[in-house]
Image (cartoon, rainbow, N blue to C red; front, side, top):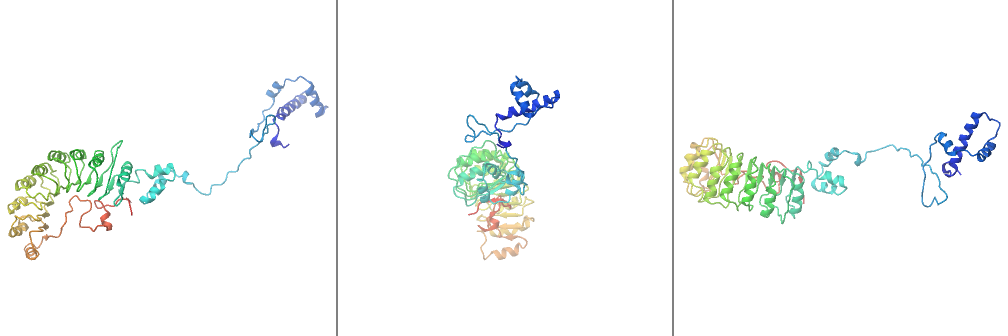
Length: 421
C-alpha cells in the first residue's frame, strides 16, 4: 500500500511508535532494537492519549469518502494532487469591468444591442444601461407599444418615432422620464397612452405632437415642462382655451411655437396672443380664417417684439391695414401671408419699404405666376415664395425628401440607435 493511500487505522500506531522512540532515546537505552521496542510498547500500559498530545503535530491528509471507494470498515486517505496554475494567455469577458464593456457596446446598432441582451444576465443589464439608450429612432417599427414602453424605461432622452402606430400602451413609471426631445408627429396613439407618457415628463425642451388628439390633462402636464423651447402642436385638437392659456403662461421660455390649423375658436386664438412668451422668435399662427382679427395681431405685436418669423397664412380677415402694425416688428425677417385673400396685390410692394428687415415673403395664392416676376422687380432684395412649407418648431422640415438621410434627423441631429427595416 502506498504512502498516499495509507489506511486510517495505521496512522495512530505510527505516531505512537515515533513518540516512544524519542522517549527511549532520552533514557539512554540504545541497545534495544526497533522490534524489541515495539514489543515493550505493546506490553506496557502506556498513556496513549498523553503521548499523542506530546507528539509533534503532523499534517493530516485529507479524507476522500466516495461511495464506491470506501465501505463501512475501510477508509482510504487520498492526497489531492496540486494543480499547476496555467498561465493566462488571454482575457475573458467576465474579467472586463462594466465601464469597458459599455464602451464596446456603444458601437453596436440597435438590432445588435438587442441580440447581446439575451447572452446572460450581466449583459442584459449592461445592454439596457441608460448611457446606451440616450437617443433612439423607432420610425418604421410596427407594434410600437411594447417597444416604446421598453425604451421609455431605459432612460432615453431623445426619442423619435413619427408616423407610429401605438395600439396600446400601459406605461407606469416609478419615477420621472428624462425625455428632453420627442417627436410623435402624425402618429396614431390613444390619448390615454399619450397622457401616461407626458405626465411623466418634466425636462422636455423640444416636443412635436403634430396632428394628435390631445386633452386638457395632456396640456396641463405640458405646463410642468417649464424649459420648453420648441413646441409643435400643429393640427392638434381636444383641449380647451383655458388649458392652453395656462400652459403658455407657465412655459415662458418658448422660442418657437407652431400652433397652426388646430381646432380653435376665437377664444383659443386670444389665449395664444395674450399668453405666448414675449421672447418667442418663430410663430406659426396660420389657418384661422375668421378667428384671427386685426386686434389679435395688435396684441401679439405689442407683446412679442422679438419675432423673427411670423406665419399668418389663411387668415381671411386680414387686410392691408395690418401692414403698419406688422412694421412695428423690428426683427421681422420672414413673413407668410399666403391665401389672405383680402390683401390687395398692389399693397404688397409697400412691405419692402415699411419693413426694412424683411428678407423672405410668402404670398402663395395671392400672386399668380404671371404677376410674380413684376413683383420681384419691385422688391429686388426680398425672396418671394421660396419657402412653400413652414419649418417653425418642426423636428424635420417638410422641405426635406422623405426617406433621405437628412429626413432621419430630429432638430438637426441624428439619433444614435435607429431601427432599420
